[in-house]
Length: 391
Ligand code: BEZ
Image (cartoon, rainbow, N blue to C red; front, top):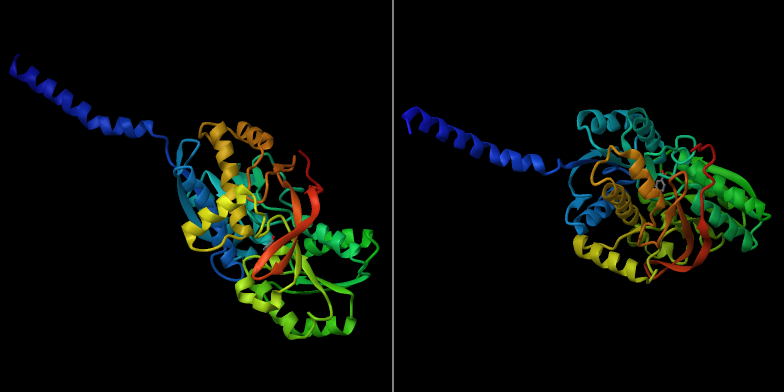
């Protein structure tokens, strides 16, 4: 073989060898970029962390891949601040170019996420924020919620309070969409059942100076109080309510956010409280027991409702990605698969409504021995009315 032909052959082999790793890399699908927009600071910080833990646990259980695609996380601390929400979601959508958004906790922040999802076509899975707008007027084929609507546990508690024979209730909440909608749901059921909400008290989020409002409650002497607080706000409110001497005279009710993930900090002041929620600490099903064991092993912590919602957000993502063989741009196929799926949740299996909100049992729970014990089902397979959703 002439010298220059030998050189050409060697060169050709070198080129093939150099290309090989590239070819192999080109065959592996690109990582799926998941944008986590959650509160990692402030009143709802613990809720954001629990949601992320739940997401990561489910993905880890699938070997780190969903629909054949490895997951890469991008994180933004939204601080539960609606004023920063648009900038924060743009960091994920425009700067990081994520394929899917998972977030958030606060109803005033999620509205900006839903708007960004609609404007850009980015897939959105909401792992907590119960704002009616998400599965109401802004509902869309590529927006899903793995948690609840603010109306759901509130409506169930309104029925419970009316059945107990209470006639007058004072409500108290942080003044923003979640609190307003929670009070609205409670009032709808309670007044349908013959009761009357006689006073609606509120304070700006995240203010926790409750004393003046507690004095007003004492003066109004209602049969009961209904409240929406969560995270650090719930810890402080439950302690202050007991500290003001109200707990022994005026029953305190609320959606389960009042006592979920908060019991260690609330201590005896939470004992006996009745709440309604789509999860509890003692469901005692094989599915929930396996989840709780895996969560405790991974994080050295007991899970709460927020962890479950994160886990189920990842399940929804997994169902859509398996059906589209990892191609998240196939939005119609993704949605069709999720719509017909039964989500195998630790809370109990559920399906999504047409508006993509869970249709789920709302449990009646009581705080007993540092646990939210499930003592009954307050409302079976409760669906949010999805007012304003046109799909
Ligand atoms: C909300 O803002 O929607 C919310 C926050 C914490 C717990 C439950 C709901």
